[in-house]
Image (tube, rainbow, N blue to C red; front, side, top):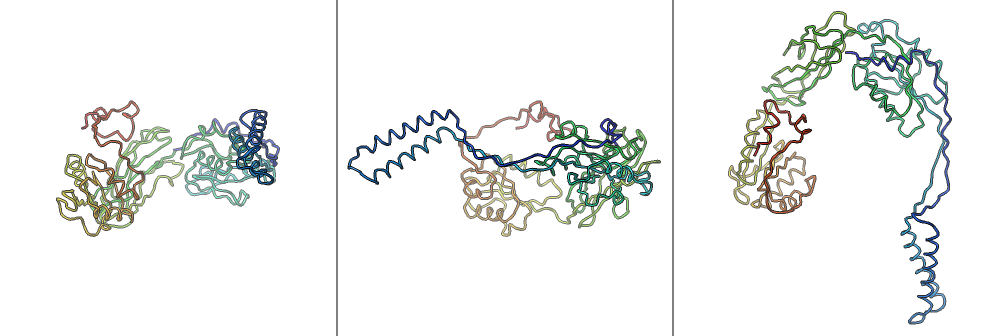
Length: 478
């Protein structure tokens, strides 16, 4: 799908050059001192300090004479001077300046939409328009040339004939953000954007242009009319899957000029179709989402290709497919669950972990120091992929067990700490303080039960949108 930047680009249909700016001159000023109050008060205070010093050492017991008296009086006066100066909140300032000429960033759009036939890559590229634009620019070191499609990169060769217009995606906003990062703190005076104004990836650049810190000059090249197109907008799936377990692949499809047309989303592996789903193409600017399910049968790094069926007279078919890589494991994740004592919270957590088909759970519930209901603690803790400490350590936890667990976590074993009524915060901080991201503090020993009350913003938050569970039901949880 292509979206238009026409309102911003129309003003640049005819490029007439860039205004000249003076260089920024920087120089080094002498150091000056400013005080929070009037310097006259500091002078009066220093006079008082001098009088106090003279009175102190005019008569001493025992008597001090000669150079020793002068030395002690001088030290006393210097100490009083420093204290009084600090009380007046002094600020020393020095401004360093250097000279840098004004800079102009030039962004060349090298996406395939600028060519007349993006499918085969032929047709007249907009080299002539780029050459004309370059001819009107100052030929000095003030230019900084970039090319962009899905991202912006500095251009080493300024010859338009060397440009390859083969970018499958156009992200104008990201290119402008790259200029902001590269020229942060520099004497950037403007950005010249050479593009057809059509983008199909990223945010709307008009919103970014409204708050851009320098003017953006536009020059239109290529064809600015909207082309018919269907593309894969996004593919979301898990990075890790397991043999024999279903892997969901969520696909977002966008279209331009094919509203309400039928299409098929296909998931393939090594050229073989493993899942498919029929969809109705959305209107311009919208996205339709579908979910495909695949069950991996072989472990290893698997590559899945998501494609949407071609429509007649599409501008390009290159964005109709997208490939994702998934690491498939043939064994379940080994999780060690250590709890401080039996309880309803532990039962709920244990049930949740045991019902996950991708987890093989090894539970250990504290019975007495060094003893667990299910048996001894496994000898090799490094064989586990993660450890969950639910209400552990409790008051019954022994030092040998906590030391073993802390050593395994410090060695790289992922850990999840779940605080419960049985958790002994003092033991937790003492035994696991080196591996915890925060140090627990004991505020009081009692436990208060509290219910969940959602705010209006919280009731609409995505993390609380649970299928089949209204947000109001969360308040009834124990």
